[in-house]
Amino acid sequence: MAARTAAEAGVSVQLLGEYLQILSDAATEGRRPQPSQLTALRELGELTAAAGVDADQAVDLYLSAAWRLWRAMPATVGHAAGGTKAAAETMLRVVNEAVEVLIDGHQAARRAMIRQEESVRREFIDDLLRGDADVARLIQRAQPFGLDLSRTHQVLLAEPGSSSAHQLDRAASPIERAVVDRYGDREVLVATKDTFLVVILPGEPAAEGTPANGNRPPAVEYLRNQLRRHTGDHHWQVGTGQPHQGAYGIAQSYEQAREALRLARRLQLDAATIRAADLLLYRVIGRDQAALVDLVHGVLTPLTRARGGAEPLLHTLETYYATGAVATETARRLHVSVRTVTYRLARIEALTGSNPADPVDGLALQIAVLGARLLDWPASGCVAAD
Image (tube, rainbow, N blue to C red; front, side, top):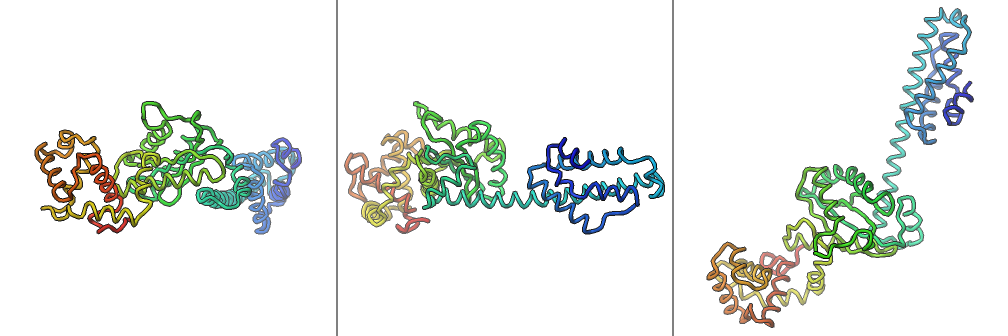
């Protein structure tokens, strides 16, 4: 009977163990299962989980086996156990006990499997984003996650406005489902690392592309919309690395995206999307720290002698160059008069000896202003911010 029941359910007969014998003893002799028998049933629950049988299937298997056994029993079975009603009640209690310990074992095994899967997944992601030196092993480990490391991939990093682990954990599962729904379950991966939600996508231009009108790539727009939808937080900032090919391409794109967000914090950029490609100039400027400190100190230190300090004049210069050196637009953005802007520009020239409107002088001033933001000058005294 156990073999037939298991065969019809499409599972191994081993998953039933001595369950039918336990029920038979309960129906014919009124015997309750021994602790050792309940332990064995719990282990069978663990075995069903390991065999890939879900909890509902396991319960159906055990209830079906009990129903078949009861129907096959002779009508006189209840005499030895105190009557048919008593036999049925005892058997039902035993079925209840058996199913309870079975499911307990099944759930315990599933939790252990999930913890193991999460541990393996997190270890793989850490190695992938770091760029594990063992390329062959990294490629092999990537296969179960649907990643072909010979292809091109791009990394997007999303950071919540609150920078809380709760926000990241809350966003990870729904964002993973949304990304898989759009891109499929191949060549995509969503995970959390440090303060970031990490999204790995196919990086070929044909797969996603960047519109010719300079709008944000569709993948970034889609991610930001999903983040707002599922978390209610409209202050997520997304950093994008450039697409790269090969086993180390993901690690390279990840570092670019992370550096883009780090530069955005140092530059106090509040844009929703920070593209690594847009910050290449800042990366070049910040590469030689000593030279950058000398430039800022040599060009901008005279501004500290101005009434009110260097910051108002520095902010005016920054806005002036951001507007294409248009004084009227600079005044509008700063909410001051054009006369105030021209006065400040003249004061800058008087203090530094450099004309902001001159192409040569203006280039030195503009680079110095960018360097000041990278170094958090004058607040830091030309000591780089972390």
